[in-house]
Image (cartoon, rainbow, N blue to C red; front, side, top):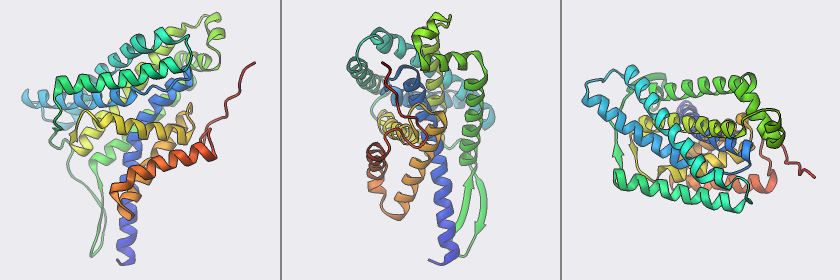
Length: 310
């Protein structure tokens, strides 16, 4: 392969990896927000993302049947519907599976989270069927960034949309966490829930809203992955959830910038490993990174070591 084509191939993988990483990053933020506030891994979060993808397919189908085919309008409506549904699921999961166990040890909520994950998988399989669901392309076309004799570097409009939405959401959430009363309440609960309650913060409400926010971001990721790949099934939440969890650990679980950084790194690793080594072992590469991080830097790239209170 000539130098120009090799460089174009490298840049194409960079674009694909950033796009995939943006999706992982949005899911990873849900993991990291919940862990940051209640120190618990929400293993059902991947299934919330999967439900968001299924709601998106159903909503697109209903809109197409109703004659609403304009992509911008359909996307806005589908995003709104998916966020509303998955936010309700996130709130319900917190109320049913986690709040009753909040005062117990770490093992009971962990088992509850895994049980809720299996329940949601089977619930979607029973209601939607086990066969994959396909969706016609919503956004087509793209920009040819560079064209050589043997290779064309392309940025599709769907990739551009995914990255733009992710950047906008990251900016909005950064402002929300840093400058709003809800963000201050979340940071107070993260540091000391008992003291936060004594200061008048409604801890239960703050935790519920954290689950709702994480589920909303998972819904956006579900809509984007449906548009990007065009095919989903009831099992996509398990693998994507594990990779997003890996991204959250890699970036430093509990850190929002860390979750996005970890998502981007996992996306890049997966894209480059698929193209330069083998697509069959891309998951091995992603989870090998998780093992290396846990061994060499347990607090992650941007995380802070936990300090045990006495």
